[in-house]
Length: 296
Image 1 (cartoon, rainbow, N blue to C red):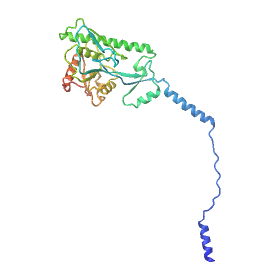
Image 2: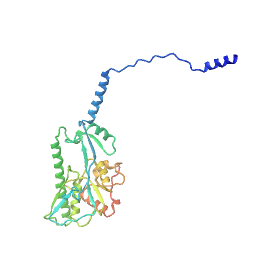
Image 3: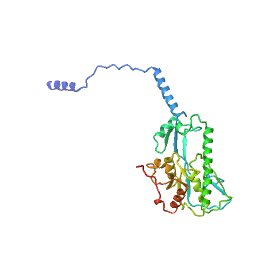
Image 4: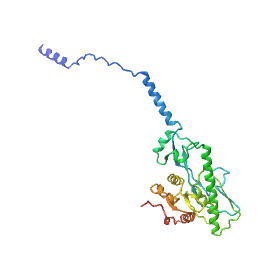
């Protein structure tokens, strides 16, 4: 009997013990108005992000165009440089004019979401709108200004190309040079248009079959002027197959430290230097040309 009592006591001690019930804490619900305020705040933030009301312009690498080729890939597309009244010559290589595309300019508004994304993108530049164009400029005024700058660049390119050839004994009488564009504006294609016209009127293939890009204004005195967005233009040139890039010396500060791997940049200050650089690159002697150096 004693053994039975001891066993019973032991089993009881191992049995799970009951605990007094603990009352659940009452649930507290936030007032409904807080929920609605939160939703309105979220919607307002989303609206601010996606409304086209940003005060910034976003720049990124634009398309390139072969001045020795067609304006576009369309079946009946015009030559980018049309010449009548004289013999022209074909090239195996390409001369690429480079461009910068932009959002946040008159007629092409940018959203705050786009600007936020662009701040963290590797190949975009974000600048205040007042840096790019005058306040209150209309889309029509913006397009007109850009178109007028391109017209001036083409006129200067034509005049400088013919003058350059005339000095070298080429008969340019009766020649008519027409330059065509497709949604490209501004003055920065002047140098490449000039080199393209010269190349089409000389029997030598200055490109040597290579893809050579560049940028720079063509001034009336033959100098090559500085342009904007050269960092982005170099990226676009490499993207579209160029291994060489002819740049204005006056842009060297923006070039140094920003040359994409795989692209070699040559610095020039006038048309004479630009043409010599083109011939040297085409003949495989580009390695001896002057490049942009870091300021001492």
